[in-house]
Image (cartoon, rainbow, N blue to C red):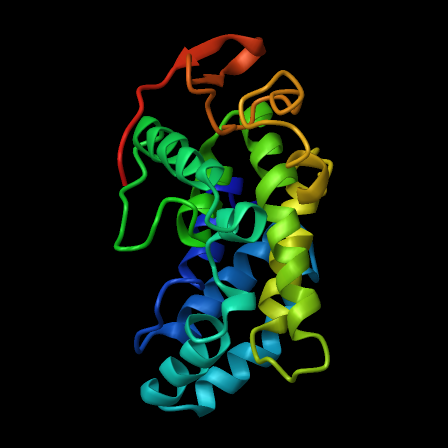
Length: 222
């Protein structure tokens, strides 16, 4: 059986800007998904077959049309939860700290982009991974899927299998963004979900580490 890390790395690669090997990436992700749970990767067959028949330029156009010029399907999970509020900026700072701690190199995208966050889910300790999945990844994927339903979006199947894999691989409870945003960023209520890199309070930013310990985080700029 392939590792959880391999699965989330393969899944994250599908949300990078596609190159000529996109169909091969899909095939690899499908194979790893099936190795962990037989039949799990079946949902990727359609997009794999479609990509095989397309030129690299057509694959790039499909990606751009689905994600880059479609705000409701933006790949930054923090944007779906916080928009452009201060809390998102604080989340980016905290996620960047976690990416560095887990030795995940940043590409040109922001830290809350799915390519980064999915790789983090494959490496983070369960408490932290469950918090990120429930508070950011699952709500963002739900909003994206609601936006593309009945729109013949070629990436709908990928979004669905991503949601299913995140659910299956984590003991996460999805938290509605509006419920989270009823409390000030960094407040006791905001910190309730265990392990999640919550936006820091102004007077003492921190992240919850394993076993409820706190790791101090310096303010940073984006």
